[in-house]
Length: 268
Image (cartoon, rainbow, N blue to C red; front, side, top):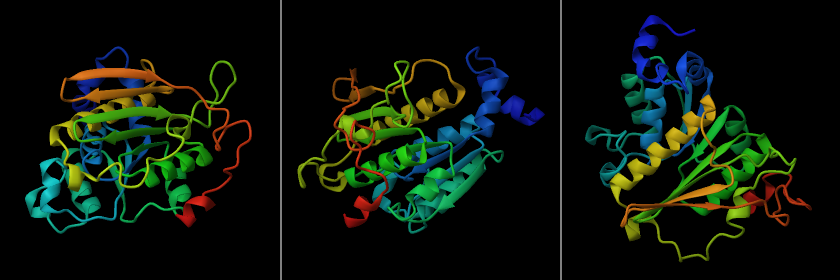
């Protein structure tokens, strides 16, 4: 049930035909886990909070540094040196006191991923490395949780939704992250943002799109990004969508699956 204050706060959502009161109530009931409170996580967290997602969890073990502030807009200059989860929670509480924030100041790993992910309805991955992306996607499959995965380059970005634990209208499993990227790129071929740089406003664009996709998934309007990779080129302001399907040889939900737990990630 939405209070009078919430009805006013979310009035612009509620008048949308595809959201309405039932959609806003679904947002209030939802719980979402955001991996990372950095360039992508910052706008994701702000817009999920503003939208009225009832419970928002945030996983990050880092502290705010001055170089973060060019793009990580949930943090401010006085927050330098503070844990990112603490400054993010403070900002969210100031924006929307109706939202419950759960902070997890830890590095997501094979030992805690299933417990963390299993406690939420939906997961948004804003991590900046392939090891974590594979870990999160495998854990979401094993925990039967949908995943929205965003990746940021210097002037490019991509976004997809993964429901690999579910089947499509043909009764076939949906594709996994491993169907899209069977192998990580060779070490050293994808430089970190500290080396290559990143456009701050692009992080805001993709993070906002991730939040929009999460809202769409929760409320249930429109067409999902399951099986579609949305790509953005900020140099030309060009958007393209690539369709991808399940690879029968993928090790997660393929014809001969070999991943039954997160044990392989413990060796990395």
